[in-house]
Image (cartoon, rainbow over all chains, first blue to last red; front, side, top):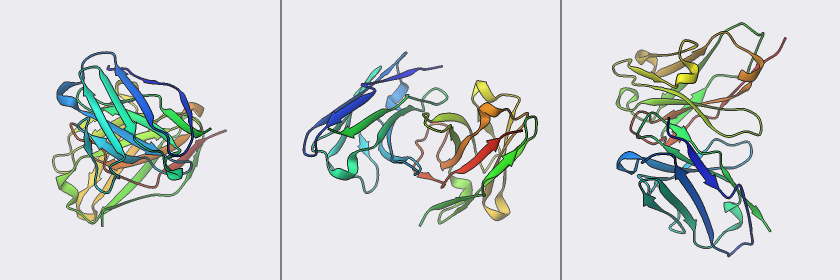
Length: 107
Length: 118
């Protein structure tokens, strides 16, 4: 099973700042089958990024994904108030697994 | 618009089984896999398995092998996830999502809370 480790566990930032979230895999994720989701309290997850770097429909361009192999990054260029949430990475190239999540909180 | 509507909350006793439904609309049900993911209170997302509604083929996470069964009724565009031998650790919100296998999950149901308590 591919284990995904996200860091940091919590990111404390102010609106307007840049957020950089990391997702490291225990082995290479084939064909960049890596997605990022946003989840707010009481809501289902929302797909942000798939294929490591493709934005899902309707996702603002302040969200971007990059990386390949075992190291992936989600970047939020300028945090908006609605971006404070928990973010999960997921690999779907070898069965499926999720990372443990990164909480982006208001500083 | 694509929608996945899940059945309501359930309370079960340890050792019982639960069956959660997920009704799809707004797209061709048999054209996309269905994923099942659960989330215990305050915890992260845990992938349980996927099903191809066209063929009925399934793939389960090793942790749930032997305890989970994913099925579908194509005539009513509904997927089902049944979990047996419930224990308190199975208390969680269960989500269905469109996508599975080699696909990301682009649409999600609203979630179904399953509580296991004696």
